[in-house]
Length: 225
Image 1 (cartoon, rainbow, N blue to C red):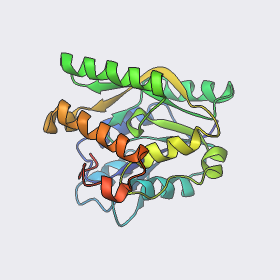
Image 2 (image 1 turned 90 degrees about the vertical axis):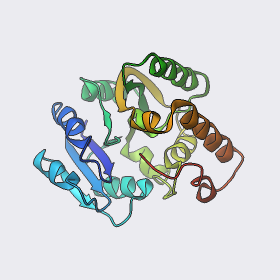
Image 3 (image 1 turned 120 degrees about the vertical axis):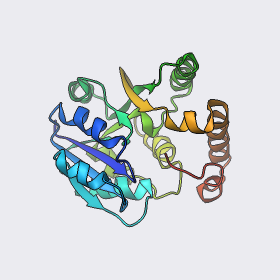
Image 4 (image 1 turned 120 degrees about the horizontal axis):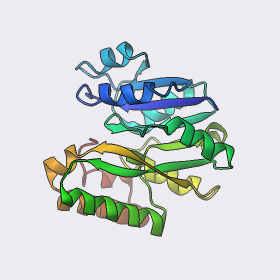
């Protein structure tokens, strides 16, 4: 299996180094950082760690992920957020899943904060995943290239590009949820509050399911961190 790790970034100097060190420790086939013209040290850090850097003009995650996939040479893609660390052994876990028939999937989610409130949040996210098979981009989605190309990749939406792809992909194949955990930053929950962020997520999901345009829904959540 040749795994291409694709990481979209914008002003991520505070998290990218830790993520890349963990990614590189497993020796994937290639690592591509698609940066939206950051003004901080994001690109410098990526190059220092041996990643290939591609620059796009605007921080649209769907555009960044499609650009990375379009220039990747692997036969499996791992789409990873810059503030999300994959688990040890992630490469073997993905390889085993692919070789046993999975076309795509996700990891369990852990939040990088010791607070008990975050353990409850993790439990609720786990429940959502098992009951409804609703997974998001911070769970480190992996997908075979042929499936990604068959469904047409990501829609270049201002928000919810991960949910949109999930809905289209699972018409073809059900995703596998691996037992290993990725660790994502708690920065947004800490900044905006767990209740507020959780309500925003539910409103976004409801709006999407009701057919409201992501161009309208983006005003519920104005940032992408």
